[in-house]
Amino acid sequence: MEIQRLTNGEVERFKRIRLDALRDAPTAYGTRFEDAIRWPDERWAGLLGANTVFVAVAADVDVGLVRTGPDARSHRAARLGSLWVAPHARGKGVGAALVEAVVGWVRRQGCTELVLDVSDDNASAIALYARLGFEPNGDASTFPPPREHLTKHGRRVRL
Image (cartoon, rainbow, N blue to C red; front, side, top):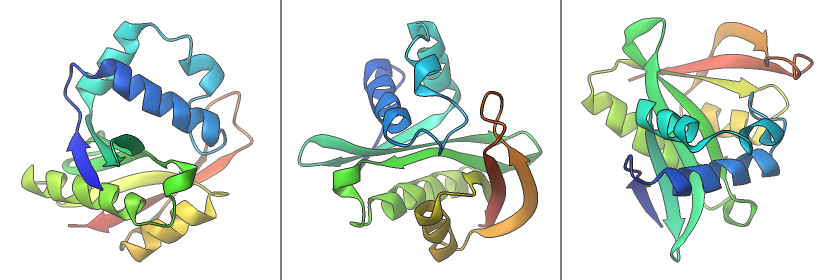
């Protein structure tokens, strides 16, 4: 397996993987597949340009994605989001490798903390984050409408 950082020119690749994630795990993210499939290419390009995105590749197939960017609350913190691993690649260390790629990258940027939100019903993601040292940070909220019935909580790891 290889972890690759997407370039701004790989909008179609980013879009394809992200749509696969939204289709596969509809309650894990605030964005709905039904909405994202209609986004113009400019919006996808903006998302890719505003974030650092890593993709896991195994046997020349994209099997996972994660993105990171600045956290709005602190210039010393980064935010991890959109972690997804293809169903056939789960349980093989792909998720941990993607998170570790983000941790390494944000450390090199001078960040001292990495934060994330995770759906309360996503037990496998919560377990992965706990194994990697992410602890609950006390934040709790719901997803935006029309998913306000789904709850999520924040986690963080000090770098």
